[in-house]
Image 1 (cartoon, rainbow, N blue to C red):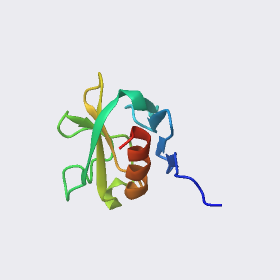
Image 2 (cartoon, helix red, strand yellow):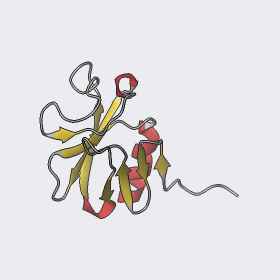
Image 3 (cartoon, helix red, strand yellow):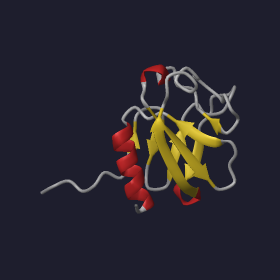
Image 4 (tube, one colour):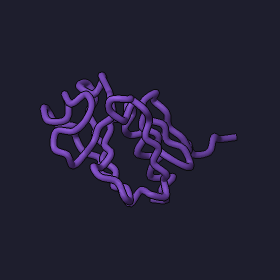
Length: 112
């Protein structure tokens, strides 16, 4: 018997399941999580983290277009995910530990 497609992802900082994406340590300065229902996601963009601008941004925003949760491991990660969410500004952005796996699960859950 083969396993069905994965329908969740959790790397300790980011959790994705059939209902929502939870970004842990999102809000400053409280460090509380942000829960984004999948039904509110209009789309997303995956891009290279870049060499300077967001790579060393441990928490917050450098341009007020995106907000990144606290992640002390961001400087060694490679992929930035930026969500387009109904009624949310700035756009939530984050760096999954296993970006290919995260994107595969997100695409499946969003029906792509």
